[in-house]
Image (cartoon, rainbow, N blue to C red; front, side, top):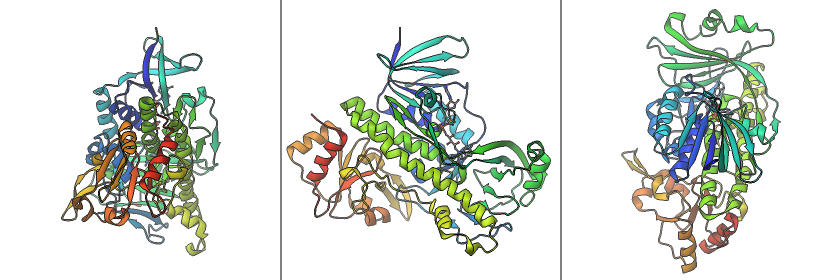
Length: 505
Ligand SMILES: Cc1cc2nc3c(=O)[nH]c(=O)nc-3n(C[C@H](O)[C@H](O)[C@H](O)COP(=O)(O)OP(=O)(O)OC[C@H]3O[C@@H](n4cnc5c(N)ncnc54)[C@H](O)[C@@H]3O)c2cc1C
């Protein structure tokens, strides 16, 4: 007999784990599987953004990342003498509208371990050493999963299946989803070390534009450090990845006795995007949907944004039968993910241009804009927004600032919880709703939040971004659905919300 789950999550990397916990939080019956026995023991992703911290905060996981991470001083491009080209971006001491510093560098084995423990203690059913083999779409949706210890295959029925199974996704293959190649394939070596001295190597993540060989240095979470260097066609891979050569590559920073090599891995950096992020009731999130060179440090973040975006759509479809929401997952996420892929490779192209142009001012402005512009994450463009699209004036498509309490310039409390887990209506003054509007909003579990002065006055972001006379509808993932203006009333917003989500009751 088949066993039935609301959702099956395939792959327990950082993105699949986040998704499983997100769905579990809303009460879905979740099966989450991975073909490996345990977490991957070496670091891959190293950076978590302000939005990443905010998303993990929604699951009480933010401290796992915070305590296992350090804030960088900033990021920039340097020449072969390690001198900055142009102004680096400084980050230290800053908090963004999301209520967190722009970026922190974490040690993934530490964070993955704690998140795996959370998963094992959650109500999700977790099967490790289990591999997805088939997805059966005839009749009821089901999938065959093989126990790699016993070779037994079991069928599981599901309402939703989420492929978080990485770059070589089986879900993508089984659903016959092709990938669009954005044509940036380069071999790089990744070197992770543990520092054995107190030596200061700087707090800036730097893109090294050295004509002899471009590279990247990431200070990561002390005492760990990472370097990445491009491999050339005429490099002998065996010699290149030898400890002797690594010592040579790191010699501008460290002597061999000052560090222990934790990992040296050769990766081909790809830039690819799945043509579809949804097929039937199967969805791709994370590396299964997109892969990019790591220059922007956004691979895992893009995956977590997929999960955050999809989770509430699944939950609201599950609870209120709103399939229209699910169709908007791909509409909202694919273009956004493509921007990240293109801008990540834009950083690679700018490094190459800086390295091979004697007078740095001659590097085309377009490349410079793409490289430095990559530090800015754009709003969502189309989807479940007022009139279906983002709008800079109403801020629809942008993230609503996190309400925070501030004392003496320091954030003392982060209050996203006030916005709730579903849609919320937010204003700085009392609002009036008709009985029908109240009924609709309560039937989709919405909250009303009137921001008091404690949450506005000391918070620069809240007081400048959220205007006194406007009412905002904020989505469960904290993106703004829309806001009122002289031509758009709250009733207009609510009517449009009903249409966008496909509400018929
Ligand atoms: C060198 C390098 C540096 C990077 N740096 C950064 C960075 O600084 N910041 C950042 O955000 N990202 C970075 N990334 C990207 C980041 O590592 C990935 O985006 C992230 O790991 C993707 O997570 P995921 O959960 O989508 O996939 P993965 O972590 O690949 O997890 C997929 C999981 O699915 C499982 N699986 C696969 N097939 C099956 C199957 N058939 N059945 C069951 N289970 C299956 C696998 O065992 C695996 O555990 C970097 C990547 C590389 C290679």
